[in-house]
Length: 304
Image 1 (cartoon, one colour):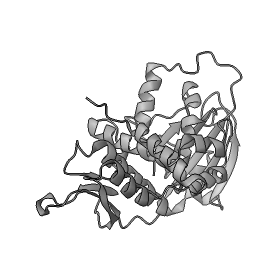
Image 2 (image 1 turned 90 degrees about the horizontal axis):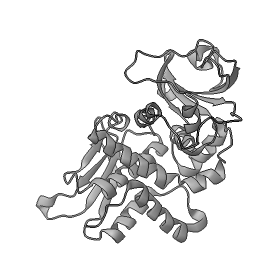
Image 3 (image 1 turned 90 degrees about the vertical axis):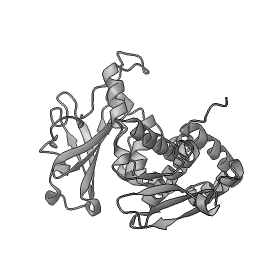
Image 4 (image 1 turned 60 degrees about the vertical axis):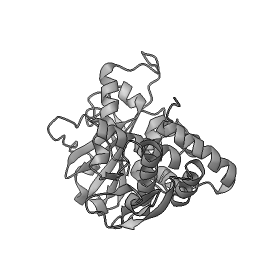
């Protein structure tokens, strides 16, 4: 029995083809063209034949089979015609393409994806959404190329990561989350609204230093009062930064906080950079059981 390819394996295989065929014209990935052409090559009798915007009340995207009762074959990918940000469309298309490659046999009647679905990871259903996100991130933002744009030891600004977001045609949040996967810096991304933390995502070095914020199964977590993100009215520009002494975000750790206000969506992003530690007391690959559980829970943050 042939072993099914993982989401990451699918993305790597497609990336190799794109590297060979497109060379210098690689990014951003034109998912609409790639999904149709690649599916036609690997599954000529069951390819993606239609990709377009549709009215999808309550859903971001949808993978749907062609009407079998009309003798049609193949699949369609649809995205919500109310999505106004092009980078969100690109990620949605890649997400649904991932469902096609990895999950269509499991869901012969198709699949609908809402923002809520993409942020819940406490069931087998949600695990499938995580796999589609993993495929999309690997396809749109290959790590080898991302590392060439932002080295692992860099402490980037929003402008630095914004340049990567533009290169890959993804949201700034998606680009930061991708960077957090490989950085050697102790950094933490915090999304907040109305003075409370929505979710937070640490880099692995930050997680190993216990620099994380738990948001699931606990009362709302307030922002520190001295965080610029706590009060939009006192910050004139869309972005600002502030150095914090220990005791503001974490008892024994100071940090630099970079803040971006996404006024259009009524939330703020805080990117916290902590000082490097000169010495580790454990192996780089060692994680406690609590850390592993936190990493699993944190996969629920929104890629878009």
